[in-house]
Length: 496
Image (cartoon, rainbow, N blue to C red; front, side):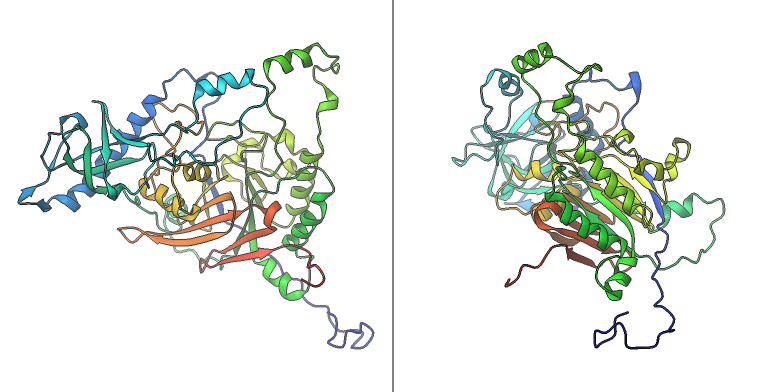
């Protein structure tokens, strides 16, 4: 340690060196909630419409229960509200409530026919920032197996999106629309107790003395391009995580980090899909002996990511999620990044036989992802679900969108309407079965945090993780106190 006077030559020459801080192990049990079938069992022959009916069937009971609790004693003008099982069975002038799936009729939403016609455009139009029509021409529908009902009302407040399950109280108007005066949704599901899953796995439940939990570091949007622009910020992040930066105080704080979560967009955007004409041109050009154009492939971004992970892994385990710009399948849930991308760091991953218990090394997981860290249930996404939902609403912050999705019990309600996803048939893992303790979304424009509570005492910490490449910020969550800390890595410019 440097003396206060700054001289390394003054002091006790044989004094014992300062003790080096050490990290505790990270208790980690991944769940495989979003793993897709393998081989021939994975196919796309199902109809996407079945997903909406499946969500309605799975959530309808919980929504009806909430509606009964809220409206059984409700009267308006001496008339008591009644429950109608099908949306097409409502009668004009009768006070009633129905349950259905929301569908937003929005002219600015992307159309699959437009996607096909893009192949013949010289320049494709830029993606829309919002689907909301400024003229107010958007319509909201409530649908079930019987049909579709147009709903109106100021209480809707433009906060619902396609795919969420809703109970609506109101009356049918002369024009056939349903005037809504109140709404209900499923709200947060049951939340498991801390260490519940680990204790239930034991044959005999005994009290275990557990060490004090450390912190989990969350970073997203590394956006590695392979150029020299990446080097400085990545080096600063690496030095902070490994405890090589600054002095003993910061090193002690860094030593409390027991796991790193990389929440998507680790690599910069890949090349766009070629049109038919460009593909035919490329096909006729001279290729590499192995069947691809070597001059068009740049391995540097993946190599830099692999090098970064390899230098961090000896000091702490890493959980890495794919994102929108990473080389993974586009449709949700995105499957883990292929091990071939990590020729060096994959040696820190457990072999396939032990893949269910990846405790101390590299764990390449799905997006969305769910797992237990230090006994807390953690749910994480790469941010696509939040970004797409924000296009349906106005003047709403990402942290508010995250809360809405949890209370609707669906972490991707806009899939498959405007967000590509796998056509689930018998079960929908995008529905929330158990309430997490921590819910994080990567690649947000700025940092955000909020603690929300449920009707049964559930408490959830919501964390919006900013893009590291744009902000230089990483998020630390204390797994004992649930306090959130924002750390910024960067170079202070003179005079700033």
